[in-house]
Image (cartoon, rainbow, N blue to C red):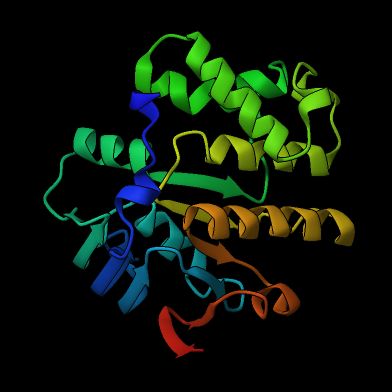
Length: 240
């Protein structure tokens, strides 16, 4: 599947994410302008599994949105997969994001009227515009890899929360992204399901050297990551 080439392999040994002096403010120029990030410097190498921790309102999700090219910094520079993003227009950002970044959110955001297989195919449809057998095969492979092959034709709305989040992980990996961003992906799950989803992310990280940035409040899960950064009041206060 040439169109679904492994971007993680292509970035082996390289810096996948680099933020330099990144600030983010909202309502810029108004009386209620608020700066949320105050000069973030962060480098993620290919294959790193990094936890992000911090209290609510500290700027964790804002940081993730900027790294994921869903929002732009107010000031500073951001490189993703070797490409400087500062001057890219929206179309170029969408292309870079679609081919290099996968997302897993706290709420799985599956289309409940679609089957598990169809949900996993969505990122590939966005890239190619029409379904084909190669996409179906890729989606089936991913569904199997998260242990849900028997449920691939089930409607997402008829699956448990843990199963739905595993489908969301499979969907995030559909384009073989170099970077996987996970925003509290275990926050709504019971302990057993949370551990299963975390181990899925960890396994894909190790097998494909996918870089993972994992926002969590779970200190036990953070200890199982390669690196932990702490964000407080819009600043990285510690890295370990």
